[in-house]
Amino acid sequence: MTVYDIGAALSLVIAIGSNTALVYAHRKKDIYRVFGAKAHQVHSVMLTIVWGQFVYACSLLHNSSWQSTAYVGIGSLITLIAIGLFLAALKQVGVQGLTNKNIFTHLQKELRGIYRLLPHPMYVSYGLLLFGIGMGTGQNGFYLCAVISLPAFYLQARVEDAGLQK
Image 1 (cartoon, helix red, strand yellow):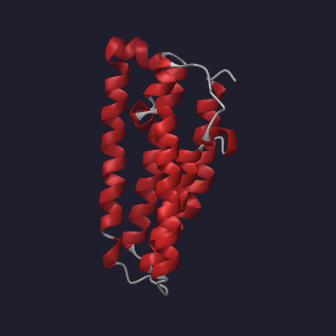
Image 2: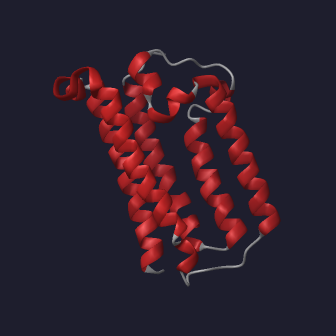
């Protein structure tokens, strides 16, 4: 494991942790008390910064010497499945789901479409994407991030769901 792998893993934890904290602040109305009508804009800017730094950290993983055998075909298939799952979820919640605007404006969770099969298909797609890229490139840092994403996104989903009515 190298500094690049650790950097990507830490940046993922920071991104998911920041998003979870922002969702929690939304649920407790603290973000509105501080930022008022600009609360969602602040949320969006913060997400852009923390997820941007994660993408940058992942772009450096090719420098890591912590590698395994690449399985390009299987990795590509898993990556395509992840993209399809993500697009199905995005079609249902709309672009506003990327910045959690859907939970700023709708307090009702709709269990239809892909959400009837998976409660949080976007988060599942992110983990699959990381795993698929790891398979396709042989970069173990992507595997590490995929494993970290499972409990981290689970906790974030719990925070999101606590503020929604079913």
